[in-house]
Amino acid sequence: MSTPEFLWAQNKDLIYLTVDVPNLVKEGCKVKLEESGKLVFSGVGGAESEMHEYVLDIQLLKEIDVNGSEYHIGARNLQFKLKKKVGGEFWDKLLEGGKNVHCKIDWDHWRDEDEEDTNMDFGSSWNPQDVSSLDFNAAGGDEMMDDSMPDLEEPSEE
Image 1 (cartoon, rainbow, N blue to C red):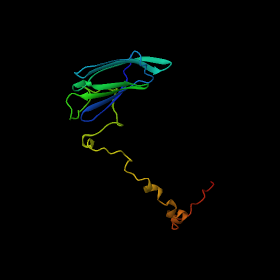
Image 2: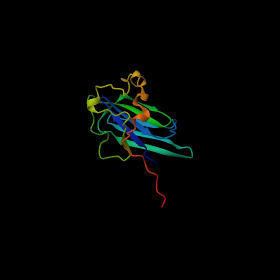
Image 3: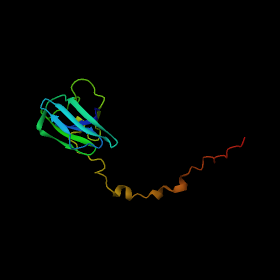
Image 4: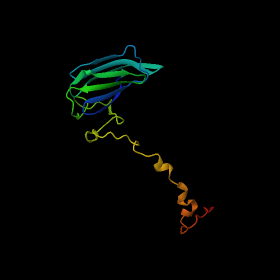
C-alpha cells in the first residue's frame, strides 16, 4: 500500500482537498467520512503497468459537516469539498497532530483570510485595447542604440 500525496486549501466555510492518484479506478474506491473529521480513502491507481493500492487515513484538525460535504472521483484524483462544522473561521492547519510529508498546500485554490472578500480574477480587469493600441515601433528601433557606446572588438586569435 502507498500513501498518496494530497493538497489542501480553504476558505471560511470549506476545506478543499485533492488526493492525487493517477489512473484512479473508480470501481472499488472506498471513502469514509466522519463528523469528527476522520477521512479514510482506499483505491487502486498508478501507471498502467504498475497499479498500486493507495490508502489515505487522516484526522482533520476540526469537525466537518458530512451531509454538507461532497466528493468527486476523477481519472487523476479524488476531490473533496468538505464543509466545516463551524464555519466563518480559518483553520491554522489541516491535520491534527504533526506534519504529514504527503500533505501540501494547493496554491491554485488557496485564499488568505484578508483575500476572502475580494473576488479578483487576475486579468479580468484588463482592457484588450490597453496593449493592442500601443505602437511598439514608436520606440525607434535602431535609433534607440546609444551611439556613445564603442563597437565590440573582434576576439584576438592567440
